[in-house]
Image (cartoon, rainbow over all chains, first blue to last red; front, side, top):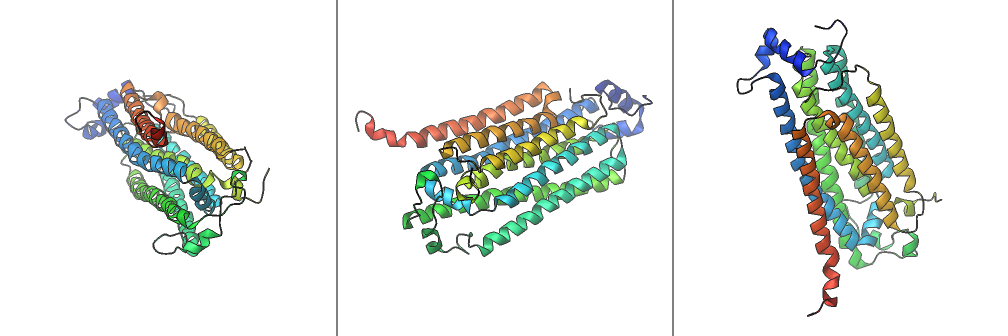
Length: 258
Length: 104
């Protein structure tokens, strides 16, 4: 069709679909054309992500309500988390989102090798995220931040929110259950998110193998786009998790103050 | 429709990524400043996170060039998330007010 490498328009894809064996092979019988088939898959993923928004939304609203009710305990507990690892993981996930979207871009252009490389890179960055997560969880283990397993009530009585408003006050015995509440939310939210990342890594690695074997072309690359949506959503959740869990209240604990 | 800009350049994606990284550094840096109350930290963190999320949805998830049907799903997700937050917060944040109301 076009001598220059370019992304096909819906009309061009339609022509390809009708003219090539590959295009006809890819079209499933319940759809009238590839364009409709692709959009069905994409909207299906968006609907799934909409349910995921509410799924994570309930956890975020729990965090908001309890933080509002038990501010001192939640601020103190939040300050014990390692914001540096959280920040590094934010950068890793954002970069993996870039490599993923470049993968989709190269898939649209029909460039197989760059597509495979971008998928491999995305999966590797996902693994990097999991490694830092592991280091962070190990630190939490060492620092007694696991309620029900590694948790010492008395340690928390010496700590307090370092904010100016708190005037150096420390937590009381009544606050300790609320500290546990924050840590439960922290483990649930980061754990569920890490589980999503894990699923993403497995699926993207699988796509990389299929892409390497030449399953995708300029006419058919829907799985790449669909999985791309999922991976960006995982990134979206972390964009909110990082400031909400790690950053609110960090300023007070820090030695550096402006 | 689901297919889109016909440019082969990867520059727009790299620019969006660079903005996202800058915003991450900004949100971390802001948390070192004393801003009076924690409320300001919360507001700034939420504004930056929402801005970053919008960039990811519009450009990485290609919502900017997506079909109207996709937009209905996106708007529904945000709308119901809004209901979840609004109604839950009005409940919890107004509970202390009940003794002040007539009849209590």
